[in-house]
Amino acid sequence: MELTKETRERFSHESELSKEMLNGALHEALTKIDKNTKTFINTFPRPASTNYVYPGILNGGEWDDWTSGFWTGILWLSYEITHEERYKKVAAFQTKSYEERIDNKVGVNHHDLGFLYTPSVVAHYKVTGNNMAKEAGVKAAAHLMGRFKEKGEFIQAWGELDDPNAYRLIIDCNLNVPLLFWASEATGDPKYREIAAKHINTAANVVLRDDSSTHHTYYFDPETGKPLKGVTAQGASDISAWSRGQAWGVYGFPLAYSYLKDEKFIKLYKRVTNYFLNHLPKDNVCYWDLSFDESSNEEKDTSAAAIAVCGMLEMDKYLPDSDPDKKIYANAVKAIMGSLIAKYTTKDIERCNGLLKEAVYSKPHRIGVEECCIWGDYFYMEALVRIMKPEWKKYW
Ligand code: GLY
Image (tube, rainbow, N blue to C red; front, top):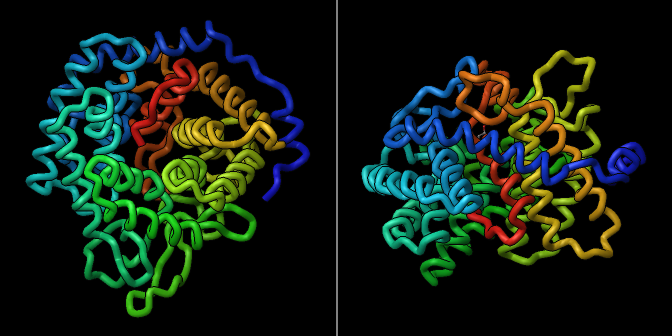
C-alpha cells in the first residue's frame, strides 16, 4: 500500500517537538518512575493498570505475565538517559528473578520470552557486560527454540506444543525473535539466528493481506505445514487490523532488517507503516483497531502508537535519504510523539503509577481497556530515549 495523498499532506510538514517538550516529558516520566522504584523492586507492575494504578506481581506470578521485562527495561532506559546509578541498581538486582524464572520454568511456556528477556537481561548485558544476565538470556533463547515447528517453519505462539489447535504464529513474535538473533551474536552459535530467520520469513509470507493490513494470528496445517488462515485474537475482527499487531509489524520488520539486511523487510516495513499512517485519526493516535475512526466511540491504544514510533525511528537508520517517504515517516514520528506528550501522558493523574494513559490490552477479552499498559510505558520511554539520545543502542 502507498501513502495516500491525505497522509502525505498531513505529514508534509514538521510538527513541533521542541527540546523543551521532550525535556518536560522525560522529567514527568522520571518522576513517576522514581516513585515506582520504591515499590517495584521484588515485584513488577501487572500488564495493565486498574483505574490507572498498576498492582504489583511476582516475576511470572500470574498467568498473563509476559510483561515483567518492560518495567526492568524502563529502568535500563532511565539509567541510560540520566546516568543515575539508582535505576541501574534496581534493574540489575532484578536479573536474578529472570534467571530463577527460566531455571525453574515459571510461566515461560509461550513465545513471549523476547518480551520478557530482551529489555531486562539482554539490556543488562548490553549496558554493563554482566555475565549472569547473558547466561539467563541465552537460556531463555534456548527455551524459545523449543517452540519452533519444522512443519511450517515458525515459532508456535501459545498453547501446548502437541495441540494441533494451537498450531499458529502471531505477529507479536516479530519482537520475540530478536532474542534469538542476539543469542547467536552473544554465543557465536548460528543456530538461534537460523531459527529466527526461518520464523520471520514465514511470518513475512503470511501476516500481510493484499491491502497491507495484517492478520494477528495465522494457523498452519500441523501435518503438512501449509498456511491455512488468519484469525484475530485481540483485534475487532478477522478481517480488520488490530492496531498493536500492525505496530508489531512496523517495529518488527525494521528489527529483522537490522539483523538480516534483506531488502524485503524494508518493503514490508513500508507497506505496514503506510497502512498504519493512512488509518490514523485526526490527532494521530490510533484507535485500538485500525478499522475505527472518530465516529466509532471506541478507545484509543496509545501503546500501539508508541511501538510504531519506535519502529519508524529504527527504520530511519536504514532508509536512504533518497527514499521519497523518509521525510514523511520522520514527520509522522514527531506528530505522533507530540500528540502523546500533549494529550496522553498521566501527569494530571497524581495517583497513577503508569506513564501513558488510554492504552488497551485486549478489548475482546475486556482486560486493560483505557488503562496504562506496561509495554506502552516502555515503548514511550524508548521513543523518548531514541529521540533525545540518537546514539542509544537498541536492546532488541
Ligand atoms: N503480545 C501481546 C500483546 O501485544 O497484547
